[in-house]
Image 1 (cartoon, rainbow, N blue to C red):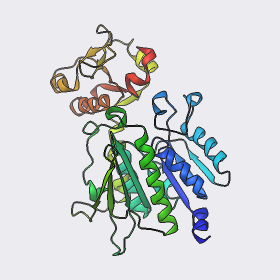
Image 2 (cartoon, one colour):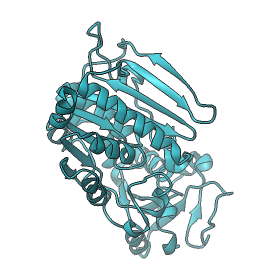
Image 3 (cartoon, rainbow, N blue to C red):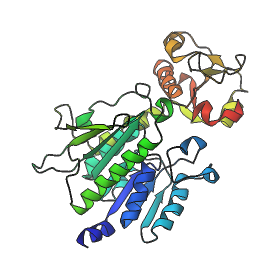
Amino acid sequence: MESQQRLADAKVLVIGAGGLGCPALQYLVAAGVGCIGVADHDVVELSNLQRQVLYGIDDIGLLKVDVAAKRLQQMNPESKLILHPTSINKNNVIEIISNYNLIFDGTDNFESRYLINDACTLLKKSLVFAAVSGFEGQIAVFNTPDEQKTITNYRDLFPVQPNANEIPNCAENGVLGVLPGIIGTMAAGEIVKLITGIGKPLINKLLHYNLLNQEQYEINISPSDEYKQVTASDLMNNTAESVLSSYTEIDAESMLELSKKKSTLLIDVRERHEFPKLNPTTYQQIPMSEFDVFAASDIVADNIILLCQHGIRSVAAAEKLHSIYGDSKKIYSLKGGIAKWRNHF
């Protein structure tokens, strides 16, 4: 009864209502967590359905937080759900996170992970972290003292934030659909353990799980000499937001409208073997493997629109061009890529 009461009194924020967030949300609601925040700005897409089990065909195009809330309230109407239909960024991260006792990071990009980690460190909020790629997943508990009162965070494990194009996310690398279900459920278990005080949570440990052979192992995490204490000023200057000022992400309709302007280039940065093939008279193909040469050339166009399969490599290309041309050219990236806007090509 005491543990159940602790669950009822808990306030948990789940950031990302995707492959990891869906199973975590289901089991937290079913366990009787009293207040759950759900933060996600995205809408349901067809490609989500093989791993994001709260959604169905009829939900495509709807906000994930709205659909998730409807299903979760049917599971347990006594759990209070607070919806945050927005992306977590430097302007709202402190305000949103400060209202919760425990944070679950189920995002799929490094900018968000570092921002959430830094905010949790600054606010002294326990953080459960999970990530998946291909057939492997990871879970850890940060910013929570162990028996020796030692506290670590994500930057103790990975001190330096990688560039956007260095490591692909699920959209680029792929993930077996059941894997986020396994890892998300395990993360929910860690949250329940932290709230109730039962068992041994993965405090200062990273659990690595391989679905192909059902092997798992733990890595001990120690405070890093490279880690510098995060300040509010650091948070406001987070890389995730400074990058956004260098280019603009647009949808397909905006791309087609901009393409009508004079002095506009549309560049496909996918490799030459990738499908679908685009009309070469409209879209100039310059693969990322050849992009450095193009970027160093004298580009005459005033507007440059970059696109790829999922809108990830195009962001990396946009950053590269901005580093060379600064604000002298207007640089755009097609958000979601060709996969999201197939009907426009």
